[in-house]
Image 1: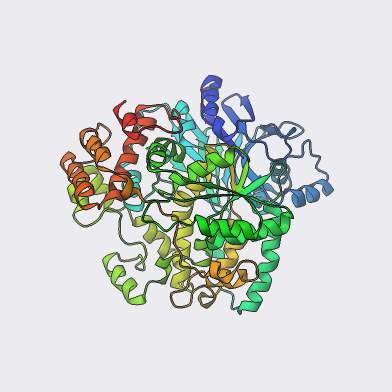
Image 2: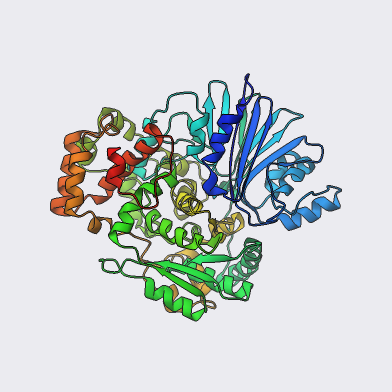
Length: 606
């Protein structure tokens, strides 16, 4: 796991000082090593978190003739098999690094090399002979990669904060990205909240020549998946073999690993599988909120830890810990998103980082095997919603700010942009194959948007802020294809979701654990926005310079009053606070890292 950054100019030589500043912004992603390479108008830099080939994996990596230079973030899980194949074909390897297979695969297979690589990755491959740069991101978007267009070329980086030293133009907010953040909880697709900065999409490669993007193409898409008419026994037999292969590959590491254990289906199954294939106790980490209205899942996690004899650690943050971790989580998330589970995840990652460099987690199980309640809405309800939002299939039609609040809160520019904030969801729904079921379409929409631009931001950035690599076996693309291809009847029955995974897991985990009511990973924010905090907020937030171009001060005061008097609206208020902090860090500031625990209102007053 690492951080990458670089630039490719049209005319001027690459600026080493600015590139070094960009790479320094990624030290948290790779505290073990740093490397920079310059070649005229092109430059690339890398920070390294050593996990495989601890001594010999320095990057950039080069081909023997130095025609190719590579910087990569992530893990190539099938590197042993690829290395064997390429060695037999006559290629000579200089390191034991998993990333080196990318160099030789490019020479062996041309652009088709991307289809041969399995893993989670984002990389930049520079071909000096052709004057060509290839930027590529893994199939599901587990690893991040951003691209910025500059007056004299392009820049790229693992995180937006690393692009700030490389941008020549003034930093401005993209209204569409901002509206998507407030209405969808995250900006999505190529669009980000920072104008001129875009994402490389999951499963996408970008070809750059002479500092200009010449081509973008998708080398993988779930749209190619077709339903397979299997019964449970046939599907379970296939999944047995698949998960054994996936787990063995994901467990390749030269350092110890652990697991975030929630007590839910996905992490419970991972604990069982990790214990089976490692043959030794796994280190597990759980978080709970005692003293709140939420059901405390710590006893469930503790019971599993005892059953599988894991080395278990519990984190019990209080209100002050959560509130004061907000500035760091906003900084870590980089591009605005508001999955509030980022707050406890960051605290878990901090604890895990004291012991480990690699942690497994269960992201993807709900999207791949249909675990969310929104997948089980009635056809009548979806029909009604589809009339309100034509082309959406009645799925994810409502924005987070609704009723009177958009007009009460939003200024003219944000209100106008919010009208099309849901369009990406509708476009994804419409591009699905005709023969797909509505359930498959819903899964696909989430795989395109909520997963890479929200959940995986949490899974990657909150961990990497503390130098920890996250691994998510349920998002191996082969598992995703398998889950999407299952007939609906194996995934959902009545009000029971994720049915196949639960039935398959009965041999591994007690049934009462698998079929317990789904709780989700919630945070009791409303209970923690107490009156003294809201009173201070009322003095600071309504006229804050980050907000006045986008919000009506009177509307913000009305929202704060509602939170204080009715204990409602905390999610909307929290979203506005996060944007104001993000603006302070990334627009007014230069992406500086806040302290681990910082009063968010102090940040806003600086």
